[in-house]
Image (cartoon, rainbow, N blue to C red; front, top):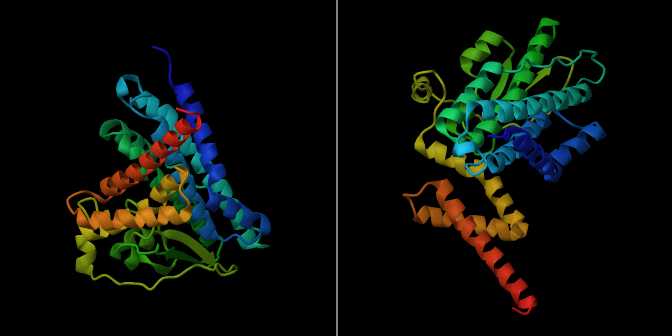
Length: 325
């Protein structure tokens, strides 16, 4: 049997690059870097976009039709997914270092490249092989965001050791869950205390940003109203490993917000305008409320596919008539 990995990697790379070129948020951040106006929080947004672009490239390439026997074997995942994540890790650190040079402006401290999280990535590879291709979705975005978190942690540590007064800032995402809201705020840098408080932790579909500021720089960050959970409520949000979990209602809200941009982009790719995409998405949400037994993703995708299929069919009919068929 011929080795399919080189072909798969070529397709993944091409799709990833095309996705990056079309991503407006990436273009906006690159422009801010050129203008010297980028902030550390832009580094998080860049990492999120990288994750989304790579996730799409992996999901549309590493399909059952393209894999031997329709199975994701370890030797394939280790030679496709892992190298792609290493590229994202490098890009996140390089971009963050560029932004850091803008934020520092004369301090003279060099950026520290975070260690590659080998164990965490290997764990993700195992999950993809053992539990299925669905781990090529949100998990890729989440891990790429975590690359930026690692950068923040490494550079905050370096600055603290250099004698600077460092604060870690966790910014809650719009309409985040109660657990994330309880973590939002500004904290004096203390590695052990921050680990105990899980300030760097992120759950599935978490879009919160973690940055830092020190005594010689100023970082403008979009702040949110904080919600303090009681110890009992925090304990309910931890599983046996001590990781944060969400209630069913919180998870549904996070999924809705996490999937919104992707689903709208799917409509725009099918030829709908931004206004049409927004209208159709709202219809999908209303339909979902009437169809409680289905998951948010199934209903949204089902309705969107109906619109997209309809648009494609209409286009084909129009083309046939044009040709005189």
